Amino acid sequence: MKTMKITKYPQSCVLIEYKNKRILIDPGKYVYEQTDIKPEDWENIDILLLTHEHADHTMQEAITVIVKKNNPLILTNKSTHDILEVEGINSEILEPEQEKVIDDIKIKGINETHGDLPSGNPKPNVIGFLIDDKIYHPGDTIYLEEKPYADVVLVPICGKVVMNPEEAAKFVKEIKPKLAIPIHYSNPDYITTTEGFEKAMSDSDIKIKILKNKESIEIEV
Image: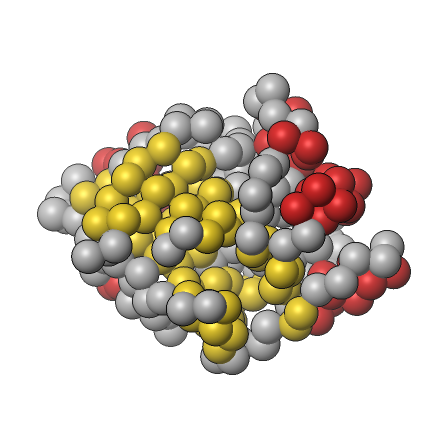
């Protein structure tokens, strides 16, 4: 068995420490607005995963700082790759169902669907990430019938541009992971608590863990 340490930050940002790698996902703007963390505080980041180009997931100024300090391998979708390229930031495109093996860690791209934007602007493409079939981060997605199994699911719950708490619970119950951790409820424009999700999960024996910002959990996977 391997040990995985998961640390939650605002919105959809998660740091995963696994197999001697530090994998940072979606370190967007709310991390720096809602905690005392600064972009330069990220250290020893080996892999940076970006689900899509919105600033609450991919804040370009922060990414520039993170890359300069850590020089991580960046995996993302084509639209985010193209935006980063304009800023002189190198990344690799991961397509849905494509797998990338980094040392002995397999990262698979998962097709996701972003919800409609209140502004009416076009929806971005979103790539989810499945790491070693152990942990699944879908980014911003509506409820989808097709989804992978993972021991741990990081599930967005706010109900605006992503699943609402009831849909998120259905999503999790159908995957049947060992653990579900809610994310994407830090946007001040879409105020959400975890109570609705917890209530919707109350008839399930799937373990859920509500992590505060900067709180960690260590699990065996």
